Image 1 (tube, helix red, strand yellow):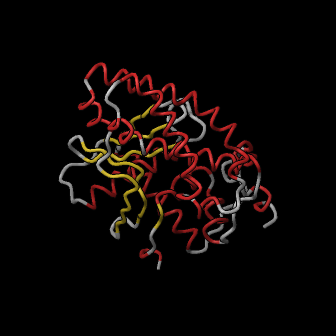
Image 2 (tube, helix red, strand yellow):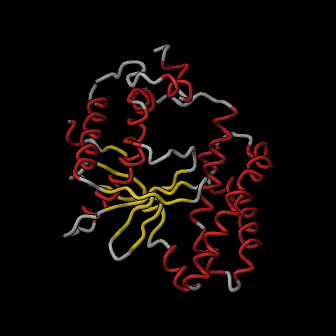
Image 3 (cartoon, helix red, strand yellow):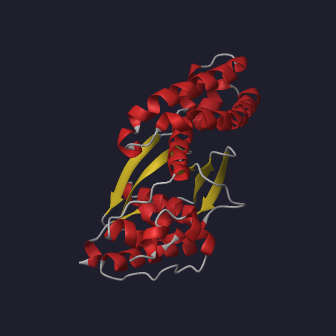
Length: 267
């Protein structure tokens, strides 16, 4: 029965991009088509995500602000070594080493921005306070709710003093916040409210766009909360037999960038 079905929060984001992608991946169990660009994007995501997760541990090792650059560069190289072992299941047979020189060079620019941001924080408020601000309460925190019929894994949860979900995004950066990223972040806030039986709503979360080293706030408005539940129900309709039409959004650019574009038109 539909009312018993659980929807992954990441599927809300996928549905926002294209409802048919949910059908192809979740119902037909199709895999995105292989491409060099998609493989590069996967490795890029892994490295940037890991660097974000490790920030607070890095800062905890530093005693002199002048050590920031060398510490960040050293950690980047450790991540490049560790990633194939941590994400072995996700990488599969991707030619990991093929993309590393180019990606390392690209991420060095982001390392500089991260260094400058951390340096500014340390100089303004000191090591200890800066460490408290950037240290998550939990990372990769799995949560589910039968009441909301949603489940997911939250990249970071901050405490200040409420619970603040942070969703890490490593791909292209919009002028504001992508609609799917808003849905995902709001859904995580709703899950945390239910998980901890909070008396007060979580008023906002963050989307962290790693390429520009920015955390952008997502206000969990009534309108956005309603949209989360509406999107959940539309995904459940797909689970129950609805088949979205081809290119339901009418955006050709989405189709061109989609990993299912070849398979989509053949079905």
